[in-house]
Length: 573
Image (tube, rainbow, N blue to C red; front, side):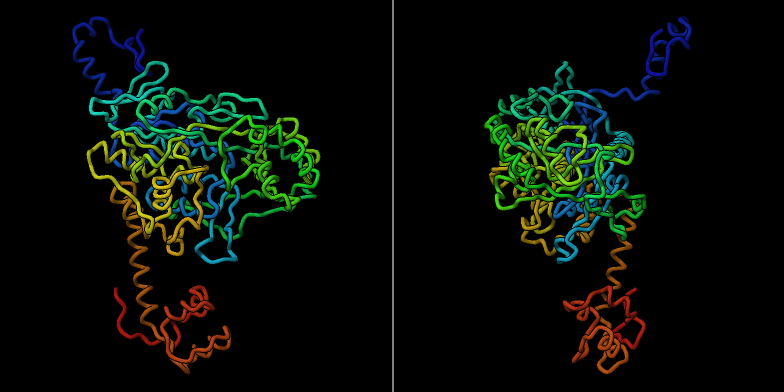
């Protein structure tokens, strides 16, 4: 019996096969989608950059293959299972506005959400969510599996093949597979020549328990593409049942729910979990200070540069010698597991010292470490070799994510989305898209990567954008959704919702600009008595809410649209 999936030749008699052989094979090809090894776009790596690249590519109409080392770790969060934060949340809103998936998947899998920097201006407000890392990966895998023109396959890409004109021809896997394509998006994260370090001990791995990728760095060097080494790290995980919660501070999720996605269908409430705050002690400081020589960086075992804005506990103690304690956040990694992420304790110290250091922290005196911390260094591409469409000098070869020198899921996802769109456009010989600094934080990040020489892993910051007062998360859809629609990433349902929102904003803007609060009117007296605002002359509602001591929320509470208001002219339909 010859098997073809659930189909078997046993169902057919030999005589039938002999007499109708050609017709049988014709019907077999018609009944089953027998796909060739040729695709429009191939994406290497299924992390956050790779998944966004594959989805934007296939939604743009390109037949796409996503190759990954481990199908069980698609969209994995090997470090902190959280999305958002200062500037990063704006990237997530922009990804969603363009039709990407990071915001939606986060809204489906969150455990804890808070708006940060609420005491400051709107330009620096940021949403941050703790996610269930397993649920996040599972939800993203479901999305990937739902697209017919997207194939997902396990395999380690070992080599890149070029045509005679030096454009991309295809990729080869370590075990001899070959896949032909028009464009490749390389999103290898920390796996390209990855090495993890604990003390002076090292191991070839992209992250704990997963082998690194090799061969591609050599292939890139043969193409005269320059590469370097960067590092990052992750803290230990501890058993939640071994924490003394009476000695630490509880941090609850915000009562008022906020969302990353602009799509209201993703706004589904769920039970949240608490995070907790504690601090290191003088004993922690002394223990680490005395053993700095045993860490990969300060012991001289590892030479790579790490991220300035996410420093290890060793870096904190060296750089901030006057600070005798550091804040530690204890964050859950999932609803159904007992692992706690110890944010603020990223380290490469030997395992025994990690255990001792944890026990010097208030509330963790009896804690049990279930996963040790480690540092990881890896190969990356000098992003100045890329155009702002993220294509290299090799036609059809695109890069996105940590391989471009960035750090963070959000930075990776944003690059992946743009690289995927452009790879799809390139495969169809269409003009590619470049985002500008004045139009998005994604454009700011890509411009920085392509024009500035990195000395450390790049992290997006609010201060990096000279247009930060305009590039807020709450207006990302107004800035970018029409572009996402142009390239096929926004569904008809969502586009109609967006157009309705625009019409409502236009009507309300007209009302605010053309509705006047008169002097000596009853409402002017209400404003003066209740809000202690003195109006010396008539003003429109838009002028009123433009004052630093007023807001649109106050306008709504006073129900100003219904009390003694004068319109200059009729409102548009």
